[in-house]
Image (cartoon, rainbow, N blue to C red):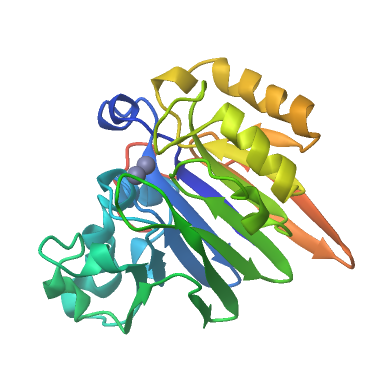
Length: 276
Ligand SMILES: [Zn+2]
Ligand SMILES: [Zn+2]
């Protein structure tokens, strides 16, 4: 299984000035590609990596905020070529799909094979992978779910945006890799996680490897590396800060999971694809 980070931006300034990319991340298992939280620029980031956006067969949204969904319509259109090649799946919370102000246009949805609402306890098997919604996070009154993605005998957890709550980390116990949206360095009374909150989450979840991402201005420069080292010291869990275009490859051999990390070489650095 491979995880490819197409963005690591969290706060408004970091996202809208593109100080870091904001395209979410891609999960690849065998021939299948799943795009999680395709924020602004996701299409271009795929092209930069030489990945044909038409080959992304599923999209998962943790919540409707623009930094997680900005390119969702673009990717649905790219997968279906505006309706010429119908197919693909979309999984998202109800308030991203319904109500007065859905973030996925109804017009595009009819070209997909499968559109499903994520609810508390939601679990679905999709082409040999299992997607599971972790109990809703508290996040500005917007329906927000953490995720566990299971495949090839491995589990990847994604602690999406939200407020630290007692026992949050317990929900991600047993994952091999845990991606944590660690937006702030210092704890604050907000519906976002800080490094200090991540200490509690990692101490409870105890993954084989943790990756912090979704960084605000507070988490720029050397602070990200210092924060990862601090998390390792406090929890004993190996922790890496995400980088744009970082890839994580997970293999299982017997009882052990091996994890390798690298940076992908950009095939089209300008994001202008031609043949991909
Ligand atoms: Zn966010
Ligand atoms: Zn959010």
